[in-house]
Image: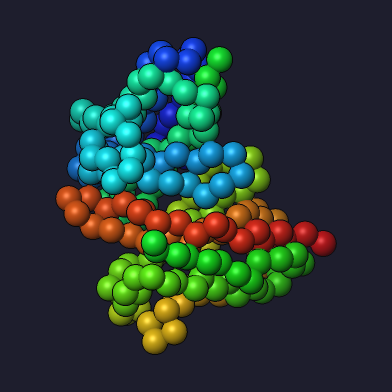
Length: 109
Length: 120
């Protein structure tokens, strides 16, 4: 059982937009910044979004992040088949331990 | 680019021990906090342990506290995880990950992972 709650799966057609939610609590998301990670099949996680809504160099602006209260959202526009992956949200809790969501599998139909 | 390469995984019997290593290169290792994160087969990410830049401060997930020990050797640019009293539920791919702190904390680079299988 993961500390943060994500939908197990989402799907959308190529070119469309999708959002992935991440729900936490006052002891984690509400008082900390959120990051998002993309894990392509058979590979290590890769940083996608940090500090709630910032993109590392090289991450296209099709990916966006936001946070409100105890929840965060990852948005992906202009979906491509190469975006098919598992997506994880992460933050830190009041004891300064990292916590993650259970992951969301994105299918591009 | 930053490189993190894990090693030391393998098959071990329940109750056994294993020592994982992570070789860091292409960045100033001693300037960064480091972590271990694991992923059981078909499951999500689980944070395991944290170590400060100097190695003076460590944190552990409750699931491994008292059994795992994180350490680092800044002279050799290496991170380690000593795993004792291993259980079937410790079976996972173990990743070492670098932590960056800006406004928040996040893992900006991950190794490719090393698989630990605990089974008789």
